[in-house]
Amino acid sequence: MSTEQTIPVTILTGFLGAGKTTLLNHLLKGMSDQKIAVIINEFGDTSIDSHLVVSTKEEIIEINSGCICCNVRGDLINILSNLIKQEENIDRIVIETTGMANPAPIIQTFLMDEQTAMAFEIDSVITMVDAKHIWQHLKEEEPGQQIAFADVLLLNKMDLITENEKKELEQQLINMNPHAKQVYTTYANIDSRDLIGKRSFDLDNILNIDPNLLVETHHHHHNDQITSFVFREDRPLDLDKVNHWFAYLVQFKGEHLYRYKGVLYIKQLEKRVVFQGVHMLFAGTEGVAWANDEKRQSEIVFIGKELNYRELAKGFQYCLA
Ligand SMILES: Nc1nc2c(ncn2[C@@H]2O[C@H](COP(=O)(O)OP(=O)(O)OP(=O)(O)O)[C@@H](O)[C@H]2O)c(=O)[nH]1
Image 1 (cartoon, rainbow, N blue to C red):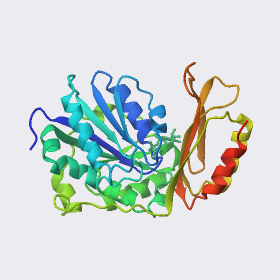
Image 2 (image 1 turned 90 degrees about the horizontal axis):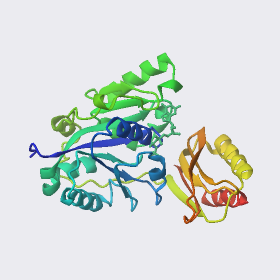
Image 3 (image 1 turned 120 degrees about the vertical axis):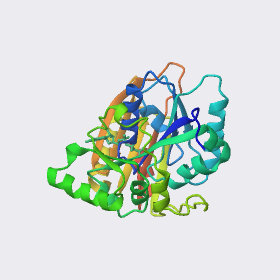
Image 4 (image 1 turned 120 degrees about the horizontal axis):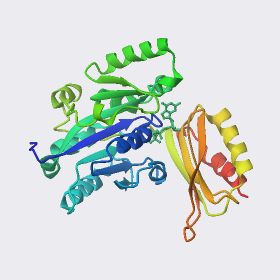
């Protein structure tokens, strides 16, 4: 049962590339007066997301050993119990799940693990929806689950759709989850006070969606067609070759590339290059400079459908300076 002392938890979910990290950055800026612990779970064995989260003050804990909804619930419980043992009190926790997570087992952890349930309370489950790509993604299983369990549906990337498309999407989402509040954003631009601390989590509603939530152990089978590959390289890359390779990937593989992102070590550049893409939308920017004593390394993750490992590996090798 919840008590006055419970620490509120925001669960941030949504399919690959929907805008979760963008929202997280925005929320953290808006809540700079609070002590927040952020738990980030990656799909694939990388920590690229920690480079994309701009905040420096918050405690950022990564779970990279697998999908949070599957085999790392033990990790999550341990992290949470360590957080309450810390001397400094934390005001709130934000968990960013992988784009491939079913939120049910995470919700379940907060309701069924006794110690966790005593110390923490779900504030709300926020599901981000990529307004541009959601129709394509609804062919997969996870976006439907994420939408069904949402207290708040944040329809992001409104800049990329028309008014009519918005109406159509709105109706589709009402059909899928009539209880969730719908909010529209571009670049997740929303006042944190409109999202956080609202206590919109509604157990009864969740039990309507999944009557077995408090009894069953969930086994989430990921779609085998969606895979992730991580490439790392200590030797510097050539910027022109990288641009060339990405232009090819975006144009010819964009449809199947659900998400790709990385940090690049480019020859003759003192700053790292950070890039990310969702299907055919791609952007690269300058990241922070490499420190003198830091090991320079490129790291790229690709997540997508029917990806060809050998072809990607070959393309990456081609980029060497
Ligand atoms: N055009 C447009 N692009 C957006 C918007 N919001 C986010 N993006 C871009 O979409 C890409 C993915 O955003 P992220 O915030 O990293 O998405 P994510 O859900 O955290 O992605 P994963 O954790 O990798 O699944 C980035 O390149 C963002 O800059 C938006 O409202 N409009």
